[in-house]
Amino acid sequence: MSRPRIDPAAGAVIRAVRTLAGGGVVAEAESVPWESLTFRGARHRIALRCADEGIAARLARLLPEHEFALDGHIVADLADARASGDMLRFSALTVVAD
Image: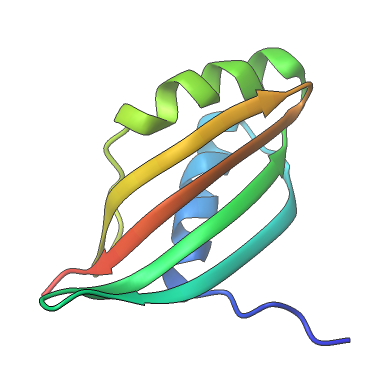
């Protein structure tokens, strides 16, 4: 069975979110290439199991407004952040910073 393709920017987003969470285990991660007329990047769907439901709920509120510092990429949109128990799920659109 092959693993889903993960864009390098997804790894950077996951590391940043795990830092905010004080750890956590990636339960799911998938990246799909994305392009517009002027930008290219990827849409990422990520699920992170946090240490407890309080951390997941706090991150669900925090992430849509969080400023990410990624080398070579910009988080253009972070949506659908939601917590269910200790599971945090969200999608992020990253674009290449030219």
